[in-house]
Length: 478
Length: 94
Image 1: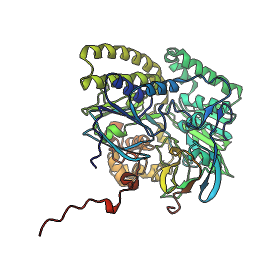
Image 2 (image 1 turned 90 degrees about the vertical axis):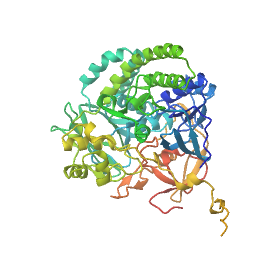
Image 3 (image 1 turned 45 degrees about the vertical axis):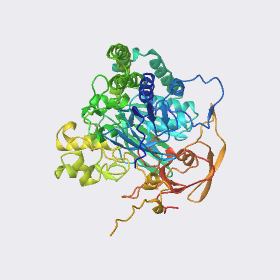
Image 4 (image 1 turned 135 degrees about the vertical axis):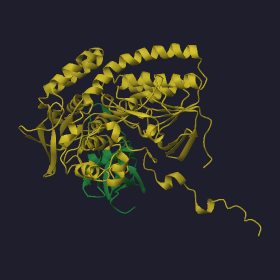
């Protein structure tokens, strides 16, 4: 394949707040920038728009932060590739993607990874049932698809998404069967000093809580779902109290009936690409897990590779905007389009805004961090790896049998080997492996990044290329 | 289970799932349209043959993989257009 577009200075992966700002900033300093995203529009998960065919109605829908982001992008000279799935990236900074019109390839001088996060769900028996889905999935349904997860929904897990989703369901005309928060009320009070730094968001949270109270939704603090069963076409969840490490303990159980369960236990930084390129990573529980090691200007240990946004540690959308901008400045400087003096001046201003935004974002992130012993009480027969149906008991047995790191565990059990490439199970599986081995997360490591990053069919890569199209060299004379 | 407040949807369109005709709205994701049609169970897990449905809705988990006009795609990443032929990946490739 020699149809590689080399007329590119920078490729940015991910069109969320970090990626868009990295792209715009680098472009402003004269760089030729390509921005790639799997979705049909910019915004990432946090500012995900409705489908293009939907229009807001009834009242003046003020343009939100996502609209502002999309407008700024449209005014720039950044070349955007939406609906494109990146399936491989190599260390010579070549990016392979596939889109509606077939395969696309770029060779660039710098690459910014702004791939955001995936949601962590701590498994329980029944979490694989249809009508059980992630909290982040519920926000996409509510905000983008304008759909309720159910007529009667159980909302469970931890962090700020809980109240956002419950309020969104009520606002959309649905019922919330119960709100189950793993954190005790005191955890929210501890985070309140940081919340004061963002009165707008604190006010939003207060409004959601008021909506939940008005709707009379039962709230179970310091509780978690012990199991979910399908009963007569509906779901029956058993709720149990949890301790300060969010481990399920003894005490009274509550049964809640619902037709949908939405559950999330925080966010895990997306490191597919930085792992694939063998960048150095470090484990940071408060930031959500493994993150690529970066210097103060978003540079990873791999030359030309930068990382920005929540993929570098859960810090929230406001911080991602500034972090992306910082990455864009760093790239512009490093390829020689921004002089040292201007770079230092501009970067310093961005870093001040970044550290202010991070105070709030990382306090929220810490509420969603996985306590190191939470996985202890996952029942042995619970499926952990959804793709390959690998249970906790199988993970424990492999570690007891000598599997010492995540790659051995993968080879022995197929955990993390399925089409999601371990994005859904990797964090919890590693936590279980470390627990069983009696060591830290750093020792068990992570699944080595592998291509394809997303499943891609051979037909998508070859397009209409046929047998008859194979160029046959003229036979050598005998 | 569609929210009607504050939104005007695209054109109504029809599609099939495993040969049965359903309707949805243009631009809606196939996953959401199936879900709204009561089709939460999309496939069975390959090893234990347990029922599965959409889970992450952001193209990461691959749980909602279906055939769409002969191609395997996550239903959450595929916008609905008129006359899509969708089928479960547990069935043969159409």
